[in-house]
Length: 377
Image 1 (cartoon, rainbow, N blue to C red):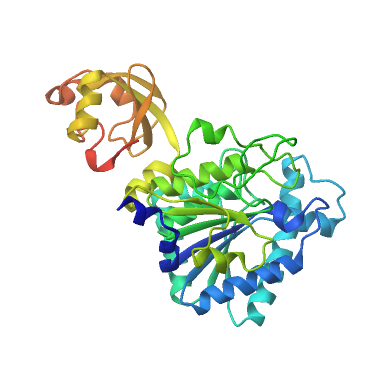
Image 2 (cartoon, rainbow, N blue to C red; image 1 turned 60 degrees about the vertical axis):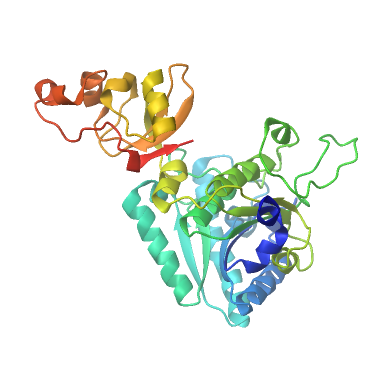
């Protein structure tokens, strides 16, 4: 069974794929958008569409395109400068994609996201419904972070994580991260022979130690963010490949199950959509520290979290917020949507359920966090 899960032949059965194109791949060292490369990627996506595969495209490059149009010699360092370049570049980048896909016979739709748009459950679902409607109409969604409005509090930080969250949101079979290197490489350092690691079963500290973060000014990502994206998708039950987008026919080679790039299979069953949202899209608003008995009950028995097991409350959160749940050593082992605010939990922590009304004057629920809204990490 394990051999079947990790065999690349399963990629031939992919029906829904998210393709992410990196900014360094699109713009290169000189910051000039490579329109010939975009044309080749569009041609390959068109081939996948002809085979009945739904494709969503997450693309970087808006800031680079805006920089080029505005005649900027360097990537802006200020947030307003980045937003201005993105505002100009988004229109240019979408026009290029639109023209190429139109020539191939396909319609595209633009989706600009902020982290806030996936954090709130109602907006999260609205984004999913929009993407599903576009796919049902045969449209290719083109997705990017909304750099014109994103600030530190709401930005994804890089499009690798955005692509991973989109892949989980839309329940994609495969996330393909196209970059300017052949995959995850062995032996960090310029003086040693480096080879592609073709398969990674688990992102261990040893794997993390292999990476060399990109210092290219076009990119906010690098291999570290790609490994983080791979972990987000594989833990939710999806698969990921990191590959060189400049290779000829790279997308069709991947879907054919060829040994190109670095493949991250999954050994997890597909995570339920709501649990997936709690785990990866929802922003943590606070933390609860629980005793050993509560930890054991949550992990071994799958129970709800009761206030009696809470020993400490950290942060300022409201009913329905996502909180981290940690043991007395401060090690997080669980996340969930809380039924009481931090102020309320501070009053009832360590208390039995029947005392809630005498302490608070009311009772919402018996549980601090219900097991249906809990995710063991």
